[in-house]
Image 1 (cartoon, one colour):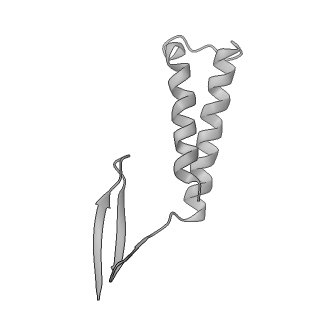
Image 2 (image 1 turned 45 degrees about the vertical axis):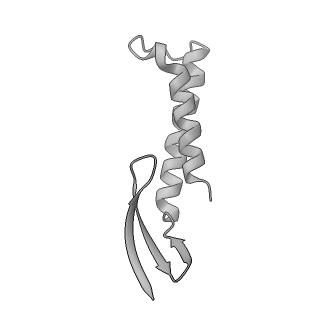
Image 3 (image 1 turned 120 degrees about the vertical axis):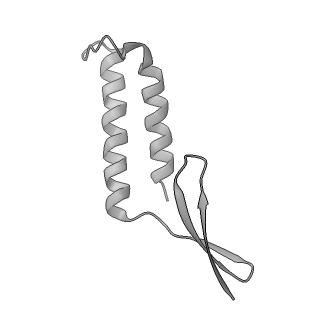
Length: 81
């Protein structure tokens, strides 16, 4: 017996689930998307470090440096297998 469902994750992402009897399988992210998100996360983390060391100065978002680092860490966790 096969059921197909769509579910929303904690990050608001819609994920397709395939239920085979008692087993639930989640469709994974494509490797290209995973690589792009990792590059974005690393870029955000490097920018946060640069802002902390005052190599990069953007006055309007300087107060949010900590949250940039947290966001990039969460993005790396989401893209991990």
